[in-house]
Length: 137
Image (cartoon, rainbow, N blue to C red; front, side, top):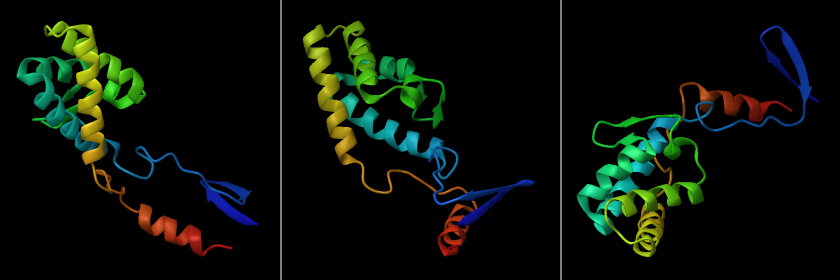
């Protein structure tokens, strides 16, 4: 059995599981990539005014690469964020039906446009640590 040493503790384990966000990858970079793709699609479907409101409501400033890490973009499941996006479009003058359809189309297009590694960048030392863990039997 493998022994994992963390600080002054030794833990016998067969499996190590990591949460990816800010443990293995830089979450900020991944979210900026996602936000940029979604912003481009949102703007295509609903225009500048609704896009600006969308950015405020989901908690992102794509141009300045800023994200509120407690915001819907960073924390909400996609289905909840879709409703939030539709609300922004509705508040910008779209009918509710058009707002929902536009949000769905924009998010589908944006998410499908993203390619691996989806803006993900490993944190310093992660690659070496994973190689070391793989070598241990």
